[in-house]
Image (cartoon, rainbow, N blue to C red; front, side, top):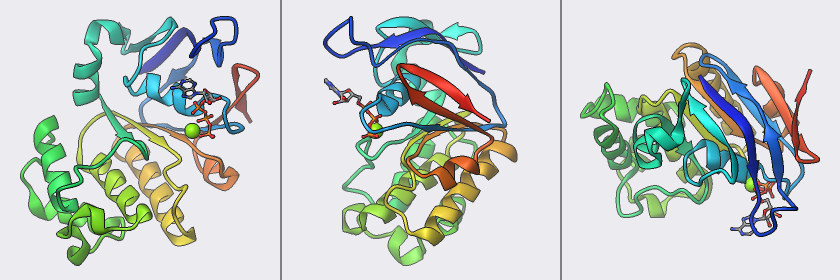
Amino acid sequence: MLKTQGLGYWYQDKDQPLFQDINLEFEVGQSYAILGHSGTGKTTFLSLIAGLDKPKAGDILLDDRSLKKIGLTNYRRHDVSIVFQAYNLFTYMSPLNNLLTAMAITGAEHAGDKDFALKTLNDLGIGADLATRNVQHLSGGQQQRVAIARTMACDAQLVVADEPTGNLDEDNTKGVIEQFQRIAHDRQKCVIIVTHEPDVASQCDHQYRLENKQFTELV
Ligand SMILES: Nc1ncnc2c1ncn2[C@@H]1O[C@H](COP(=O)(O)OP(=O)(O)OP(=O)(O)O)[C@@H](O)[C@H]1O
Ligand SMILES: [Mg+2]
């Protein structure tokens, strides 16, 4: 479904790429974890996959079409759902309206279905009382779960998450991973997450480590 071809990226110095010549394939119905030390370029890699930034070398293909052809704005709107800590919610809205708005913008199957949005939030531990409060009055972990619920409520086939369990306690971590596995397996999406937690990574179908500018599959 999603393929990187000779993918490379550097910030300032072309001779010091974060990663180079990366050739990976990600399939629907599967979940992928990316591990690696801090500063190796995991978030940078995800931002390329998410269409938030352009590769410096090589290309990314969705169903054999280059993201350059699809257009990054178009790609972000229709093809990918992003859970980034810095990639924020609408701060002036409630969790419920965040979901409903995202569902409307992306033309999701359940667009306009308030009960569906509430149930999706509730599945992630955001009950009816929190769902109608301004998101700014929620904790960091609660906001993160709203961002994950938004992903669940929209129909993009590719779900990309940067340390989605980084702020969560044990119970919520378990719940979130179960949800990610469910959307990969039952809803046939492709889920790619970056995590520092080996326990979280080991529950995904595939694990990669970014090290020495390369991705190595762990078996
Ligand atoms: N906008 C930027 N300009 C220059 N350098 C950057 C920029 N963003 C990140 N970097 C550098 O690129 C490297 C990779 O950053 P990145 O955020 O991708 O790492 P990471 O693997 O996600 O790390 P962590 O596990 O700590 O989140 C780091 O050394 C970082 O300092
Ligand atoms: Mg990071």
